[in-house]
Image 1 (cartoon, one colour):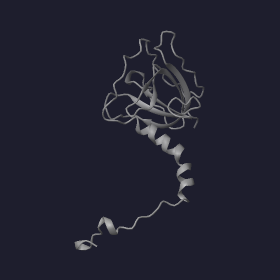
Image 2 (cartoon, helix red, strand yellow):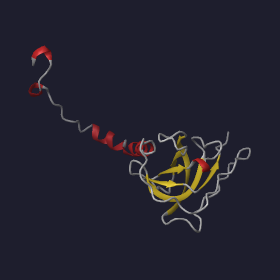
Image 3 (spheres, helix red, strand yellow):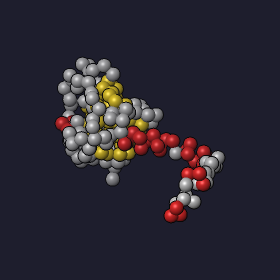
Image 4 (cartoon, one colour):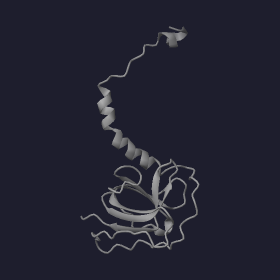
Length: 168
């Protein structure tokens, strides 16, 4: 030991990772992918983006008492190349994002899998934000061009958003 009871690098024991942990780590991969997608929505410096699409945004409609039918969002005829649509159940809502531009981010469990298999991240500009914002469990359909987010994840930059509120 070095002076003061602090171990020196030469006498610190090393421990090999247990092979018993490998299956547990592998089962966490889908969860890590979801957290990575969520973290990609909260960077302090926004990634440079191409010009916004020329299509006129269609604001999400005010929900009627309990809108439980989900209208499918579609890419407009004059949409930018790379326009995609996706629908799914909301698993995370980022109502206030770090760069302060007023947009919201939604993480959907979606068979469309724009961001990752089974996951789609949607960036909703301030002027398209549904009022009130969707909650976890609501269903959302969104369409727009796909851009890279601040962490390199693929996400839909919504030009059209529809919400179906969860019952209850």
